[in-house]
View 1 (cartoon, rainbow, N blue to C red):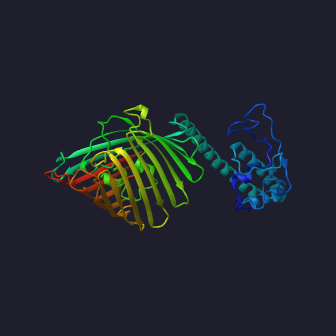
View 2 (view 1 turned 60 degrees about the vertical axis):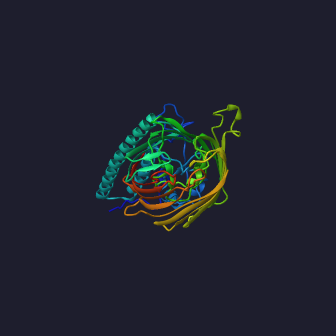
View 3 (view 1 turned 135 degrees about the vertical axis):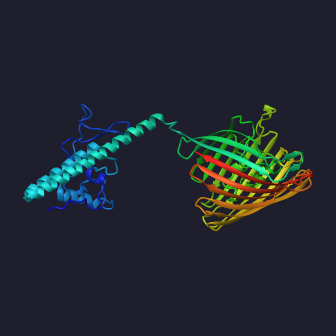
Amino acid sequence: MINLRLMPGLGVTAALALFGTSAGAVESTSGSGSYRTESSVAGADSVQLAQITSVSELTDVLPSDWAFQALQSLVENYGCIQGYPDRTFRGQRSMTRFEFAAGLNACLDVMAVLISQAGLDPEDLATIRRLQEEFQAELATLRGRVDALEAETATLRAQQFSTTTKLRGQADFHIGAPFDTLDAGGIVEDSVSVASRARLNFDSSFMGRDRLRIRLQGGDGDFLEPFGGLANSAGGNFNVTVARLAYSFPIGNRINASVAARGLANDNLVTSTIVPFDGPGVADPSTPAFYSSGGITGNSVSAGLNIAFTDSIVLDLGYASANSGATDPSRGVTAAQGQMYIAQLNFLPEGFFNAALTYMGSDGSAPVFGGAPGRVDTYAGLVNLDFGRFFIAGQAAWQDFNGGDDFSWTAGLGFNDFLMEGSQLGVYGGQLPQLSGYLDNPWIVEGYYSIPVSRFLTLTPALIYGDANLGGPDDTTFYGAIRATFQF
């Protein structure tokens, strides 16, 4: 009885792509990734393959190649390998089904000759023929699957949104209920509130490492206003606006540049905001509040550089111009009503310690928590100690402004993968920036639990306590809130 088995280390492409063939060879179609044969293209000139007697005759096959021994065995023991006229094997090129059929046929021809010379008895020959028939059935099944895959691929290509652009979306829905009335600085929150925001990002790449992002956004509603509101909210009565128009691109291997007509400022210009509760947190102060306390918003012209000195040390440089030309077009970008400069040095190794030092300077805009317009200089530090499933993080900022100075901070801790994979249980709190005009700095504490219901839906319940310190009848509040985030 004869046992048939595949030779170890022999890849289908390497072993069959250039077997001796009686059906004619293949030829690359100019300007495309497809191939044609004599049988499929009338009048095509065949490429006459040359029989080789030693694998060393193939100029692009080296002894160090992983399939060298398999090719050597096929040449010396079976004689069913041929080379192209230029004495190359082209083992890295993809193989068509025509090539596979021709190569298989040539190898079976050699096997038939060897079988006849060996004088096999009829029973052994019948066994081989039976195995051939079974293999042909598998090939027919595989051919059908490939045909179906090719048809599906052609349909997807014909119906695809764009060859250069991907569409990504996110929708956030909030509901919050205060357990007591907030009446501070003319802001009254005493009933169940809802807020929502929807985003569509059109991300285009033209060179592979660059990205043009056009973001359409609409939303309505907010609460926790004395504390900066919600992290994922947008006012505007669901009017759709272009919230971001920005292009980022590499300069060499260590520098990434970005320019924006709208939507990049403050924390959008830095590599990392370090603290892990930036993102999962429901209230806006989960993002370090000092980034936005200079009064320059994302509705600005901006430019930035991210310079990686090493894999773990990155310097961020950014400039943003608020309301550039909106009031007086002749003033232009560099003479706009408000301007912001930022520099942040990041230390981001793979270990448990991440940190950053930040400087921000802003001119001509009112601080987000009140006060008169003027110059604000911010000096801040951020740190995160990540122990795997447990982290401790925080940030502190000292700000010098027209008429005084201010100190703010937040700190928190949390557990990753708490009770389920992908979740995060965390709590953070601290003293928010209060540049001038009020009695004292606002305070806030938030506890949240980010729950990944599926790859598309995340639920985040939260308990939030705050003291606005605005001198109102009731400056404190205690909220229960939940956010549902859909990503697609």
